[in-house]
Structures are given as C-alpha cells and as structure tokens.
Image (cartoon, rainbow, N blue to C red; front, side, top):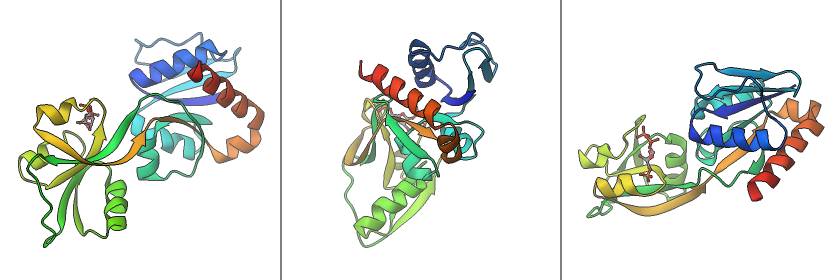
Length: 207
Ligand code: PRP
C-alpha cells in the first residue's frame, strides 16, 4: 500500500488524474465528496486530501509516504523530506511587490507583509537589509495599499491581483512549481514502489 497526500483543490485533482492514468486509480475516488481518505486495496493505493500548506507535514511525519507540495512551501518550511520530481505544474513565482511609486528608504527597517516569513527573512538577510516582518494569512496585497507595510513577499501567478490593486513586482525571488516529495523512512522501505511512482508520474507530466 502506498499512501499519497494530495493538495485539496484543482492542482490535487489534476495530479490525481495523472496518477490514475499511470496505474494508481482509486475506485473509491470521488472529487465531489467531503471524504478525506480514498483507498483502493486492490490497486494498493490510499489518497488523503490535505490542505496544500499541510502536505509536507503529513509526509514528514510519515502519515503519507509521498505527497505533492509547492516549492514555495518547501522553501519556507524546509521539511525533512526528499524532493523526487518537479511536476511542472502549479507554476508561479515568489516575488517582492509594492505600490508602483515605492522606493526603499534605507534609513529604517523595511516593513514586509507576507505569509512566507522564512522566505522573506532569508531573502533580505542575504541582501543585508533590516526588515520587520508582518505575518499575514491571506489578501497580502492589502498591506501596502493601507500603508501597513512597504512591500509584500508573495506568490504571483497571472499578475492579475497585483494589477487590480495597483501594485508592481520589484524582484523575482524564485520560480515555483509543484514537487513530488517522499517521507525519508518510506523512501528506504518502499523504495521500489516510490521510485516507480515518481518515474511514471514524471513521464506522464512530460508527455
Ligand atoms: C495567491 C497570492 C496572490 C494571488 C496571485 O493568493 O497570495 O494573492 O494568488 O495570483 P495572480 O497573480 O494570478 O493574481 P490566494 O488566491 O492563494 O489567496 P490568499 O489571498 O488567501 O493568499
């Protein structure tokens, strides 16, 4: 049995379709149901629907053998897992954005609003810039508009949210895509199964 944590939502559903295509179909699967676990004993697979930001926790703790998680979360949380494959989907970028007329007043710490506290700290530490982090959980774009922060460190996908709020990208920190990750112990004890799944999924993604 291989236990797979999928991020609840569109990305998770897409990944499930790919896995189903390459032999990991789950007869109990039903995307419209509120159930969180789907098992298929015959096919040897069990799927868990997990909040995207929690996938790495389930995999790190071994509740799931493998999972699909964004590079944004991997960079921010640094989970103790193996990163096996880039699935080339869920593509976006971690950026610094601010009001278009913003300029950096280096005489005081920069106020940075973000969900990604560790990413922001690391980025500005490397630049040698003092910051004050303002941790938010969503609608990050509001912070500079209300002058609660100078900049934001956030995900930009299409750029629509920034545009509609008159904000602009000032720096691109790194590219993001969905990654297949594995629990370290499971990788050792279910090595063949996990590698096979990673290979089949990567091949299907590239097709
Ligand atoms: C994310 C991100 C941006 C938006 C970027 O927010 O934090 O706000 O998507 O997408 P875009 O460039 O295509 O406009 P999410 O939808 O996860 O909601 P949130 O505000 O709750 O973080």
